[in-house]
Length: 274
Image 1: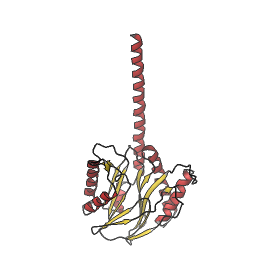
Image 2: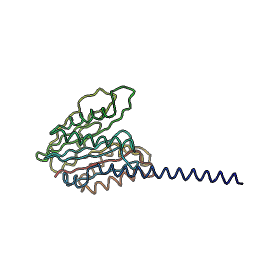
Image 3: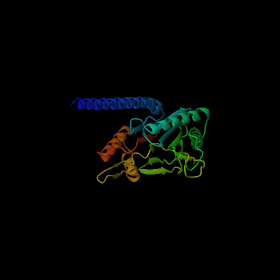
Image 4: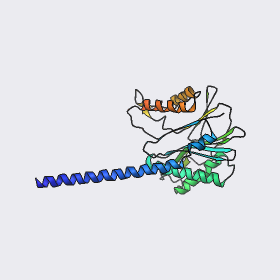
C-alpha cells in the first residue's frame, strides 16, 4: 500500500511539473506575441496612409509566420504582406528578420523600385541564414507582395515573390502575377524580381493575401477553400465598406473551417483608393 501511494505521489509530481513547464512555455510565447505585434504597423499609421483599409490577421499558433509592413516616406507609402517559412515560433523569428531588413533597406536607400527592394531583401535573408544555394540547405525564406504607392501621382509599383496582387476595378478582378521564386534560396536560378507599374483609379480596391485563407480545409467535403472562390468572394464584397468586408471574410473563413483545425496563419489586407 505504501509503495502504491509513493508511485501515485511521484506520478502526480511529474504531472504537476509538466503542467508548470507547459504554462511557462505558453506564457513565454504569449509575451513573444506582444513583441511581434508591436513590430507590425499600428492602425493609426495604416489609416494615415489609406483611410479606407482593413487587415485580417489570425495567427495559427499565438505568434505568426505571416506579417504585414508599412512605412511612409515623403510622398511614398511602402507596404507589404509576407508569408515566412513555417508558422509558430520558427515563422515568427523569420518574420522579425523580414520586418527588420525591410526597415533597414528603406531607411538606407531612397527611391528604390519595388523589385530592387526584394532583391536586397533576398540578399540579406540569404546572408543572415548563411544560405549558399547548396541543394542540401533548408529552403527557408518568405513569399511576399511588396508595393510602393506614389500618393502624388496615383501610381503603384508592385513586385511579388509567389504572391499575387489583386485589384478590383468596376466589378472586374485584375491580377498582377508574381515571380515564381521566394525571397531566399530556392530550387530555381536566382534572377532579379520584376517591377510592375499600375495606374490606379479612384475606387480601385487592392488586396494582398498570404495563402493561409485559400489553403484552409473545410466545407461539406473537407476540401481546401482554394483561390477561385477567394477571388469570387473579393469581387462579391469589394463594393462594401472596408470593415464590413473584413467581417464577411472572417465569418466566411470560420464557417468554412467549422470544427477543422486552422492549418496556417491567415493574413489579408484590403485597401481602397479614394
